[in-house]
Image 1: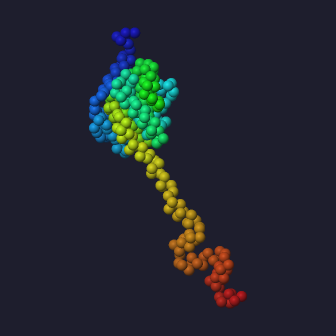
Image 2: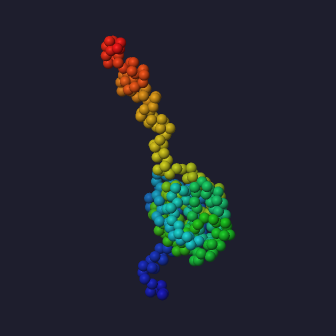
Image 3: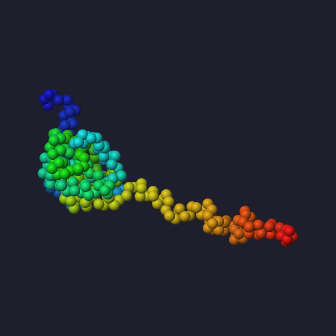
Length: 271
């Protein structure tokens, strides 16, 4: 079928993908492009931009088949720091940074960091698989030859991919925190990731102390009746004498002696 006879919808989709992948294909410069719209990020040197914790947004669906033929959904990795790397086997800067990504991925896996590649513009999987083997890449890569994930996976106005390679780091809440639009060395890559490893998820950080610090655990039981709470609780509700006479009335030997005088005359005591 010739392009002149192709349905209009297909031509439009093809044009959109081509525009998305025109990016700065295989960029070796230090671009500082933004995400378009009202972005809340701070651009730094080397094409690196960050977003404050309270202003981050989550990507759209980033899921599909990996180069190994498995199914992967990035959303399933929530709770980990996720490093997304857009790359192609045909891209010289991608080859330059690959060994650093392989090493840092191995080193930081025990700290809850997951790496996921997004392989694009490789018309078949074979060159990409050979690339992974050559550079010791042990983490999975989503296979995105037409760039659909790049085009649709990131909301407008966020830190979306605009060059190849692009590295985007998601925090433990699954939100976009950092983007780099240039190839990275080991030190630069660690500098992107380490602050996010130190962060806690929004829910867990606030919730744990509220559910039971040591002090709350100690104060709760005394209110229900340990020895010390019996002494401290009643005084808060009455005078010192009532605190002493109340417990004896319920049953120790000494309460048997002290209780009756409080309730009767001296004759009753004598009896």
